[in-house]
Length: 288
Length: 327
Image (spheres, rainbow over the protein chains, first blue to last red):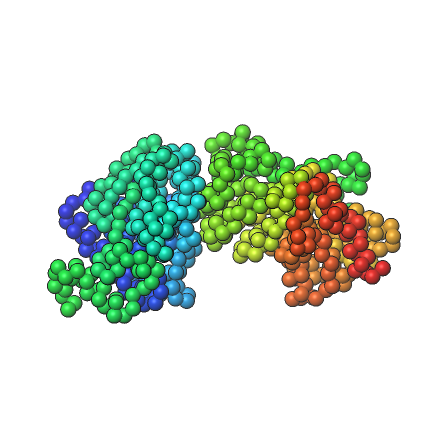
């Protein structure tokens, strides 16, 4: 199914939803007391675009066999996936409070058999693209038209398995597979180019026989437009290098790798929520 | 004597006993499965001929995926296929799969409950001249520890054929352990294969029960025959299925004899011996002797030389029984 046209009023709605998603990420992480902040905030626009515009899916029928598949390789950014899944109706928003707690369906890293709609289990890096390849191969074998999307981090391109997967997808010309690479430049130990340089990523993908696109991953219209193009590639798998700002929307978290793997405390969450509600001071919040 | 109820190969003790590698049984069963079920797919990591998936490749090229030398990729692609309605068999040497790609299998196949069958070839020191790098002697330990998996160690090519078909019938992850060289055919096409423990050698008033898995079952049977001639009666049980363990029969047999010997081409810790020790220590603590590789790597050599040097042949099994009985 084609991605619908994006009119201005829908775009405005998506932007507000992305902001709401960021607020829920902060609240969810505060309640959990552990987890990752920067990645989920940086990918709020991408996940909002996926769940509210790009994906052909039905939150009430997570096992529907013709659904588009969205596979998350870098499982640690799951708070944004849980939040946008809850917002789109996969489970009650209230349940977000159970993240990382005992008896919860929301495991610290996503587990396929715990919550319908997750598609795979992830956390250990470098495994998601391969799994997405398996899912897209199954679609080809069964003559199914669903599209498989996989979100991967930049840091996990240091895993050998990632490159094994890229070679295979290039060989098999998997045009029903689109990878969204979250290029936020940070990983646990610092900036990617200091820890272990990844560039030139564009050239690397091209040489592995992928069609390469780039987009501002924090610009919903641009991201959706590029995904539309990527889906139309006929002879190759496609990658969208989505440039994102880690911690996007919260000034003291933006571009700071120290926020990769920790949650806000109460004071920080309060400050973050105020910034998000006032669009970093540009508007007055009715919550004040 | 050989258990008459199981229709075992009456020529098993002949010098010219028919021999065939367990990997052959795997390859033949894969083709059968390919014909029966269009969801069966096969992946290999640059070892199609050696792991006997080339027959399937020729017959079903659309359902065969060559991933190159990339065992992690093979496992995770299979996981994606397995959660999408396919029944993937991944085939490589056990040192590399499930060795090298252990965590990938753990997360994407086992924890995901993906319907993937892992075929580990060239297991044990029987791999011979290739040397210890290619002799998987820890694979039973590192697979049976996973929650929810089933683990098969077939004793000959007939049982390998059965285990491969059985793996496809099971919904969920399965590990199949195969060996490289030809080994004696112990069973026949009339043998009723079973996941439960089966008595391959029976005798009156047995003093020891030998639990064996894989091709070394043949050497356990040879030892039983020799011991009988010396007036020592034993039982020999074939453990085709390491997991789920047939605890009831294992306990019954230990109770009957009071002494146990385990026989496997694997490290003595964590494999068949480990499984039997776990079952018995929590139900019926029983003195045990372990035949296998003892906290060491083996080396290059002919399989027959290696099993002699590393004390896994019929003579070593016989000695273990006698030591056990303090004769």
